[in-house]
Amino acid sequence: MVGAGSALEAANSLCHACVDLLEVDGASISLMHEGNSRGTFGSSNELSRRLDSLQYTFGEGPCLDAVREGRPVLATDLSDPQDQRWPAFRDAMLESGVRAVFALPVAVASSYVGALDLFRSQKGEMTTEALTGGLMAAELAALPLLDLMTADVDWEGAGQGDDGWEQLASLERVEVYQATGMIMGAMEMGPSEALVRLRAHAYARGMTASELAWAVVERRLQLDVDDWSGDAGDVTGPAR
Image 1 (cartoon, helix red, strand yellow):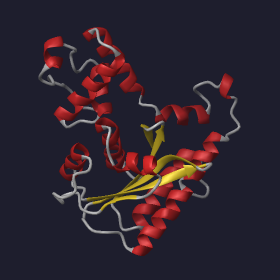
Image 2 (image 1 turned 180 degrees about the vertical axis):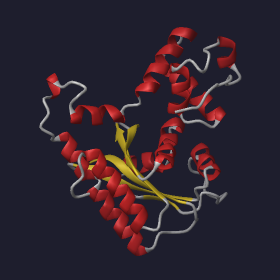
Image 3 (image 1 turned 90 degrees about the vertical axis):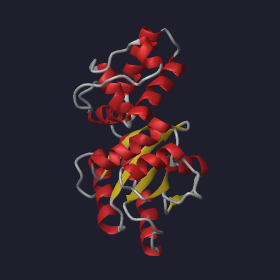
Image 4 (image 1 turned 30 degrees about the vertical axis):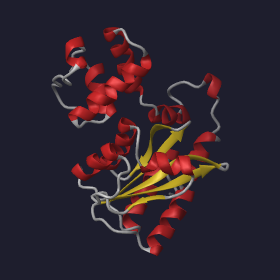
């Protein structure tokens, strides 16, 4: 993490180090606020970002539980039929080739603001050494967030060219908010129902909420009332 050009680069470096040192195949840092996922702040690769985004899409997952409960949440075998936690998220993980997930809460100023999520393609517990290293990494994950929060930026007059502003904006799922607004207008419904529809259609198509939102915003998915009342409709073109 030393010498990183920005807080986001430091977070990415930490996630890559986790993959190198902790016997896992992917890592990401989820940022949470008031029980909701705000975005992915650091990841080892694009797949890790997508797996983290699925927790937002389904509204369930180990990251949310780790932050809410303030303790590590360890899922050592997602294929275990006795483990009934997060059914939608679990199925999506298994389809993506993930068999184990370990979520370690990240605290800033005694408040849990996110989690370090570690993904592995093989089931099984983490070794004592790896788990200890993961807990240390979760503590280190707070540092780039602190750097960002205490950056010398005039937030009241900040523009989109400011580094801190851009990094904070990158955490927001702007495309989801835009798509929700478009659904509200087309379907004449409130924001809560529109977001539920968006998440439901994403789930039905095996997409993340962000991927489906881009399809709506870029008008690759038509907002037809009949389609959105039942079938998920057709999406043309690649998803972002």
